[in-house]
Image (cartoon, rainbow, N blue to C red; front, side, top):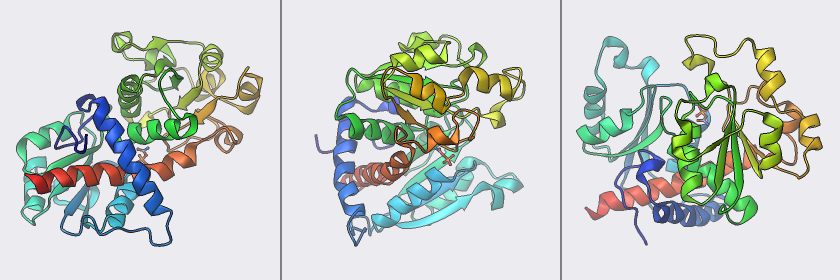
Length: 310
Ligand code: CP
């Protein structure tokens, strides 16, 4: 297969296994490009991309921007905090105004689940979801799975546990979809209050005990507690959370095998993981960030190819 089955990247849910494999194969080529002295290719000189961030971001925003620049696309950046959204402009009006400046592709982060899908149904541009509320964060899951593949060669049959605030996490949902499509066994681990009801219906196991979960897994993806999405208390105190679900070096060293530690960032050092775990040889957190640029270059490049061919 040489092209994606979809014109947008709205969620892992909408990709098939061939799409994911094509993105990985394309990312392999771009990874080689970004490690050359001249880290740029002229592939997208005729494409203009708008990065619309209605919610804060460090990694995703910078990674998309760098990926677009490495592909030689023209880019415009929009941040809700300094825009006319503050004066009451709707999402569709905002985006249509931007598109009338002849923009081909929109990368959007938005606090509302489904914002990317909604946009794709109302505007004439290719949409990439850079995180929509607690729904999906497809490029994060792609870079996470790509990083696991880079470490183990194959994802099929690996045991992966996602630990922490699953309820508010778009990273968790996208990772569950991606890991399962790639043949991994997935468990979630966290306080019962931070696990969505009916999570088992997605085919994942539940393990409430962190030590048991870590003893089972090859890879642990440690998620941040998303206090900004909570309007009530989901556990007694941060100290209580750390005691039950925080990963420290003593726990890591006592495990029967060397597992791989991942984190999508931003890290709350000393809460979900201690610094000595985050910075340990078993952590691939910075490889995840590095791979993010190649994965985003691949996704943008493959979607842009579909714009040109229409
Ligand atoms: N992983 C991630 O989405 O981080 P940012 O919120 O900094 O983009």
